Amino acid sequence: MSALARSEPFYIAGHRGLAGSAIWRHLANNGFDNLIGRRSSELDLRDRNSVFKFFESEQPKYVVLAAAKVGGIKANNDFPVDFLSENLQIQTNVMDAAVSVGVEKFLFLGSSCIYPKFAPQPIKEDSLLTGHLEPTNDAYAIAKIAGILQVQAVRRQYGLPWISAMPTNLYGPNDNFSPNGSHVLPALIRRYLEAVDSHSSSVTNWGSGSPRREFMHVDDLASACLFLMENYDDSQHVNVGTGTDVTIREIAENIAAVVGYTGTTEWDTSQPDGTPQKLLDISKIKKLGWTPTHDLQSGLSSTVDWYCQHRNEARL
Image (cartoon, rainbow, N blue to C red; front, top):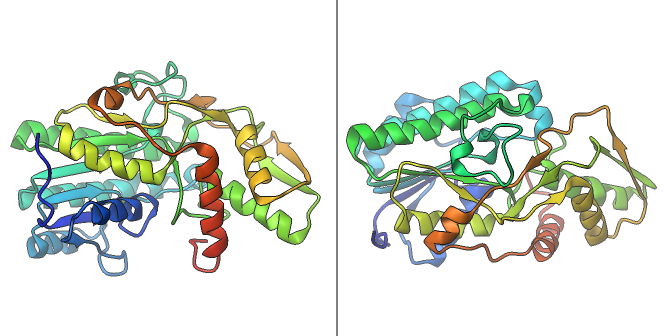
């Protein structure tokens, strides 16, 4: 394995999103000076002809596929067709176009939801396809599993050193803070800040608060992506996480403290909890030489600060 050439064209699909924007920042900070990005208004990745024309024109040598239709438990549960169909379109179009121009290094970003609902904890990479998925986001998970298999198929058929990485729950700058489309952590940040602003005496969260989740700052994911592209070449996907988890109740209490909320928190147990625990085994990537550097407390504080400064333009 060798370092990627810093001057070669490098396309980050989804460069304005949570993961993609962090990857862009990290690459720029590490000397990459030929980064390529397109807003969805400029290039609809669901449009196959447009994607092929883009790849033919730009001829990227490296690609990270961070673009996806994403959302929280409610959005995934309410719109499974959208999450399955649109993600399959995005992945297939981008990978097929990348093959057509011979992209040398390609990293596909998946999600920890690919694993069975009751997979042994912490979850190893070989737990994939060993049990039933969590029903509230099975459509999104199936799309991501298809992406992993397509990367493996490209390796077999074309011999290209493409790889896949499966990050845990991400948070940080440029997250989605919308009421219906956000994941749990940005949703809690928005909810508790709104409670502070409105002087509410009570906040109600979904579920029991007992499920355990692992949270990783998106800047750690960005460093892992470059590390893997320069140090890993194998068909099996790689987990990327912190190796530690907390309950949803604990993360809610932590966020409430960070934003200065002093009221009470209620839990609506009529709403779904989702998977009881989802902690990744990160021994594979650690053996390769990568470890995360952000702790949860400082990461939460910096994310709250970012949201407070960008509330008007944050994705809502």
